Amino acid sequence: MFILKRQDVEISSIQHPKRDQQVPILDYQGQTFRLISVFKASQEEEAKTLWRELTDNHGKACVLLEEPDRYSVWGKVRAEHVTSDTSDYSRIKILLQACILLLQSVQIDIEELLGSRQANLFEKDMSEVCRQKQFPQLSSTDAVKHILRINPLQALQLPVWQELHVITFLQELHRLGKAYFGNTNFANPVVDRLQEMSEGDRAFFVTWLGQSSISKLWH
Figure 1 (cartoon, rainbow, N blue to C red):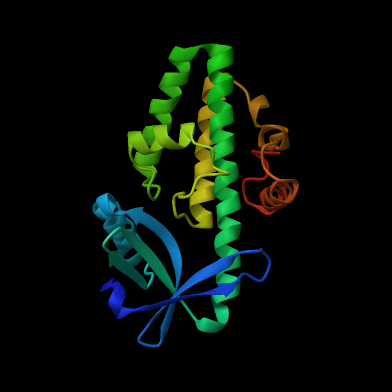
Figure 2: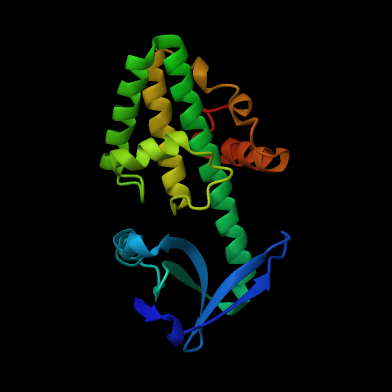
């Protein structure tokens, strides 16, 4: 939608309704935007790729803010919906954190039970799945390698996904896991694989999962 400079906009913050944190808000010509993702100055192409992904493929009204030391992507919201929209963003973030923990857990089990060669093959297969499904910010081998090695609960930047991406990812992870282990025992109980999450976030994910279309795969 827009590529803007810092002098073109006003940036402020509001108190998150449920968390002890401030939410960055950008104002441009009477329109309100919330922060989606931040990139280093050297990551201009990554920032533009995300911006185009959201605007061209998902129909989002977005701002790409260009500053001397960084780039940032902001998504348009109605001013009265800022807090609820931010809550929705936090909700998706919890789902994505759980996805990454499940992915890492499955790979660890494959390596321990089947050996490092099979674990490497699983990583390649998962990379190919992500490429074919065109998961935002996860469609390259390097991106998959990265999330297999990060702590998603502490990472400053995670892929920007919609709920549909989460569901598709968990479907494909289950399919691959079944192919490697020869059964679906690895998928339950899912709560055992999410012990690093806070009790509240873990309970939220398990409840969401139980109400989703893939509840029979992961339980």
